[in-house]
Image 1 (cartoon, rainbow, N blue to C red):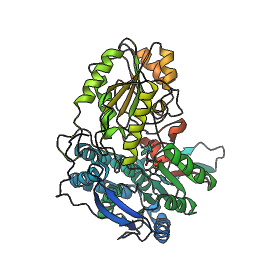
Image 2: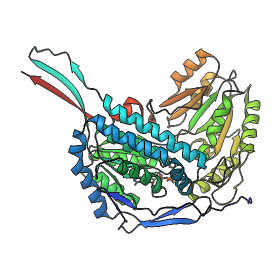
Image 3: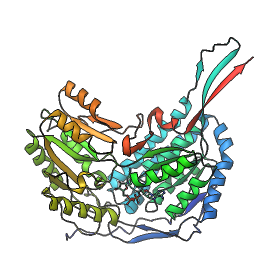
Image 4: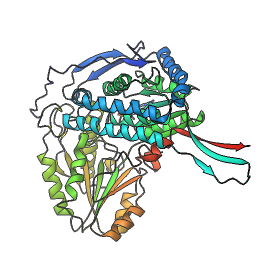
Length: 486
Ligand code: NAD
């Protein structure tokens, strides 16, 4: 066990977890207890109760009641409210980031970066609402105009996980609101405070009461209730493939639309002509961002045998150099895992891989509590669980390949298809690889796949539908054909 300091600064006020229903901040009246636990110390920072069934019903009723007026508000005016909320979040970024670090564990700088980059997503969505163009179809009748219009689908139920407590709620809440939908969001029970800060910024920006509602508590009961509510017309979920599949089945039975952002096991193909010095460091750094708890985290490094040794050497040097510690400490570059489940999972996956014959290049041993070392495994046999299970932690897998086809077969071996990365200086190789890889996103010579202006989403078991870009708002709309005769 290491001697990492595990103190939490006492000067950070952690608000109590409350609910936001029909424009009122209320205490939960449900049976489930909600505890905000600092993953760095294990200390309980605040406690509250989750929503009762009556409170969830009130949230849905508020979203249904306010939908017609919100949908009828000009997109420009809705956008002004969203833009104002982004400005408020920027002003409050330090305060919100401290709370995010305490409830989730990521380093303060990452938390603040998440708040600031989320503001750009809000602004994109705000303006994209003004661009939800329909079209005029050339009519085959001289007295009939055929129009296609996009209308908001109705009240939305959004479910968000604990790894990006601001970005994911922002994508769903401001995407749905910009399109003219109202929303009931259920943030992860472990990290509701950051989502509540988003709701507060929207409230302070003049969002009409009831347009956004925040409930959480008994996860299974609340999501079941939301999915069973006829008023809810669409669900948007980010989280594991296991839960996504379950919710999608329930949504399909009720014929509700669904957008699903699920797990990944991202391949990184490093060809022999890759620029190891300039291009590769960013992807290595991305591995340990948010302690690897990112759905687009680079995981399977598939490296040409000719550059395998120098690549591994650089990777190890970087992993060993990272300063691991509590997120509010200034020098920390990687925080603890967000909860005991992930910490235990990483230990178990590493032990299993080592037993299967993998080599530990760096890291591996638990670092105490929820802390884990940045770990690199190499020469991992396919029988190791981690070669098929998403690690969702600070664990990199580095194996060698010989031929292009072999690399592509490995990249596409798993049912996942979210992010993927390719490193080569050769344009033809880049072109062939981006065409061959089955993924919703592919970055070449870069670690960046997520942009507010571009769709973010996966294929195969990584989900369906997109957030971001113009595609993002489409998911919150239905299409109406208007044939207007005179
Ligand atoms: P989990 O499968 O229990 O839950 C995943 C997420 O779904 C959590 O946010 C949880 O609050 C939510 N959830 C669980 N049951 C739900 C329900 N009935 N209705 C609505 N939401 C529900 O696993 P976990 O331990 O929280 O996370 C571990 C795994 O989840 C990771 O290995 C990773 O694969 C996946 N995950 C993915 C993302 C992502 O960004 N795609 C985020 C967080 C977790």
